[in-house]
Length: 562
Image 1 (tube, rainbow, N blue to C red):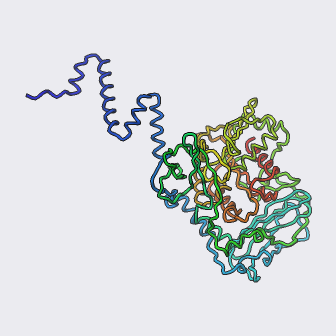
Image 2: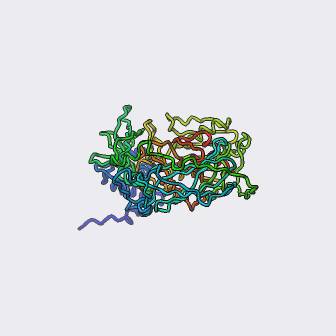
Image 3: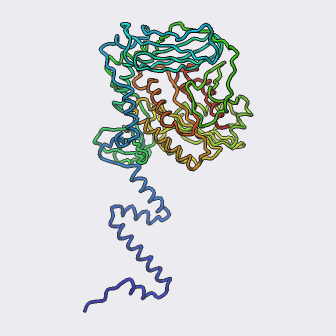
């Protein structure tokens, strides 16, 4: 005779009271859960958290984050391939078509500033404010022969030093060796015209090929904490090695960063980072000669100047500056050292009272590189009620915060994440990509975000920059869905000093990045502060622009938010 099978229904009849039945079901559920979990490889960790039930929820979150964010792997894991990201691939293909290979047998066949010619089109006896002056530039090589293709990297500028006046000129490339240089005559007086040959087309082609060839022009060194002792190890956007790696991945945004895993030290113990320029180059000796300092930024126009008269022309009324406006090029000019926009009406914020009224109840988040950190220094100097708040951290790259508790004003600068190029040690403890920072901003009509990045991306393949801009755009779109009244301002990259390390830091790289930025973000309702245009007008050829430029940038920002 077999024993009867104990079914759940028979078991429940042994406990007639409803409360007892509930307790029994709970015990059965816990036992089943226990058996399943003890069979898994994580049962030891589970036992620890079971003894500390208050942390169970945190444990589940960590396990989720661990699966897609922070991993240790014994094999090399490359960064996301462009093939996996159609938007990145499409932009990259277009750029490759616009910058074709230009091999050259000798420097003599490259573009020569000395032999190239420039002629004013439709010359006239009187030039008036508001007129456009066009110059035809014909590019020639060192033999005096006209070039058959375009692609030279040129910079046009008009100026009147006595008036502290300057403006960018617009360059149109006809791709046949000729260029149209257009100047808008913004002020009266003696005006000098300039066109610099920054790089010949052959040099541009070489820079483009070299840039996209490798990730190792900059080396990253990560610092891990082993108890109380720091341990240094190699890190990078890509590491070609079979050694065990710490992978710092953002699966949603296809961002990746890697470090060689120190033996016996968890990946979470990464605390600091620094970089160093390597001696690796992808340029040939013949190509490198094009980037000697005497070959960079050579004047094409020789003593070309005109006189501009007022001619009693009336200025068209302009709408007040506001986010969403399209910015032309040039977007403004300097006169008496002050920036004047060409596309909107500016309010002056020279008086302290006006600045304080504008900033009242504002939450301002500055996200990007050290050219935005300059804003914090400027505001602290000019607005006496904005005081530094100690956010802890060390060094110039820590988060900077200014507070005015009486007017409820917050200004915060936080550096962008990889790649960030500096020989100074900076903290990784609260490091984050700009899209993730944007996601953490609630937003409202009194919140403004300013974004600027690019200088630190120049030494790396362009797909890194393209991907970041696309991710920033998606984050801004998410922000506008939850808080459409939040104001977002994009500060473009600025020009910098001419550097013999053109392979890594040439303004050509910055120019390409500016075009990408405008192309990707062009349909968003954001404000644009054209730092590229401003620094050409001011002739501020430094990675950290002069105080006059910073004052003009902040003034433009105040016009956008007030």
